[in-house]
Length: 113
Image (cartoon, rainbow, N blue to C red):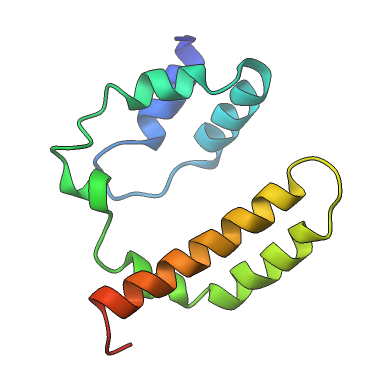
C-alpha cells in the first residue's frame, strides 16, 4: 500500500466519531483515480468491521438525520441522471438506491417518523 494513501484511509476510516478531514478524502479520491480501488480495499479489509458495531452499523441517528436531506439527494440524482458521459447515470441510480434504502429503514426501524 502506498504510504500516503494508507495514512489517509486509516485516518478517514476509524472508530472515532469525527468528520473526515477534506485533505484525507481528497487524497483517497485522487489516488484511487490514478491507481484504482486496490489500496482502499486492502486497508478496509484489515479493519475489524464485524466486531465494531459503530463501523458495521453506524450511529443510530444516521438514517433519521439523513432523511432531512432527502430532497437534496433527489435533486442530485435528477441532475446526475441528465449527464450522458462518465458516471452520471451510475451516480443517479446509486442516489435513488440510497433514498430507497433510507425510506425502508425508516419504515422498518423507526415507524413513527
